[in-house]
Image (cartoon, rainbow, N blue to C red; front, side):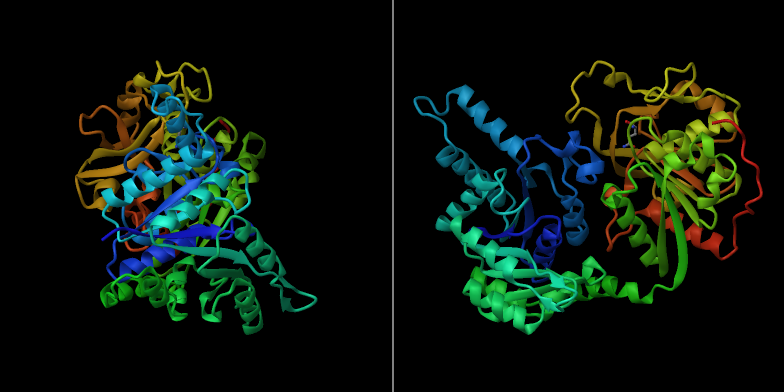
Length: 550
Ligand code: GLN
């Protein structure tokens, strides 16, 4: 059977949860055992997300195959609990670079190359090829931005044309504001947005309404009237407090059955096992009771989206232990040298401290202070990529006495504990040139790493240019640092640990593979030991005077 398509569009404003709707639709279909996968189109002309600023765009997500993709892919993988590959990510940059390379090869000889038909035909061809190759029953296509944007209008046009030859269901995500003073849900913005969709030749089959409070009947009927839809096709998607509820919330409104019917799929029966598995995860939230505070010390903390997967991975692990998680976001620059002494007050009361990944020198000294604080006070610590590199630097400086220890990324010092990788030295271009994607590591028995994973050979995703410098391995190990995991050839250090308390750093990003149905092992053991600390089972007093070095 040919793949059928659901196209998810935003008509009013972006950033209101199109990725969550797309994931929820895929999840619902998978609960009926249809093979359903998402594809995302982003209109920007970057080839991929790797060259974007996480502070503006949110986290750069990494797939097993090493592609650097939009953070929505994190949501897709978490909902579906499956690994996606680069072909599911389409960007304006990829589309145009392919069109131009075809033109140079002479594929369009004699023609002037145009948006219609060349670009639109290419998009349709590509989508059909991927969905055929993946043998999908349904592909859910999320269109980044909103209808009417100049960046995505050729893609929206391609979707209109796709609907002329294949079964396509359009789902529009809109926003219904409620003016506090008037106390009424306003549908006029949606009415206007529907007009602009019609201008592009698209009539939605379902409208999903984001709102603060549940969509009331009056607003639902009004939107239905203006969109030629039955009121039950106008779905409520108000703030549920937990994104993982959404598939079940849509199901409660009958969306699953209506969609399957509308797609013309044979009606499979609902897989109760899959539904129960999901329900039990969603319900966990209500069971959470043990309070737990984790401080995340980074430099993009003002935009939590920059650390979306870290936040998710923490909450998956917290849910697994029934913990009520509070994340204390700490801007690392506020902990810089000038604040030694009282500046670290903000870390008091942390049950665990985490330093996530990052690039560039800003705020680094503050992160190192936070790591020292965790080590001397025996507060469980988890370091991710940069967080591992800084853990090594802190140890070199404050335990092994290498006072100028640093990373070649930040300083031209003598003791480069972290250095540029050999193969990186010759690279001059920035796009997709880091050490990326899934890499295997071997773990040493009787270490935190080994007991966390319960395995010797593991694989995690990477995204970095710098590495632990092997010239310092002996010295740091001699000083008590444990190298608990390396690449299979033993060459690159992948995991390090403290010996006196729970502290582990990894060169990888285990947060990318954490899912509610399968929390990341390292986050689980971190949360477990943070809970132990909070219960007084381990952990010290906040009495140690920090070294004055920075
Ligand atoms: N900036 C560091 C590197 O390139 C760490 C990267 C990261 O944390 N993802 O190696």
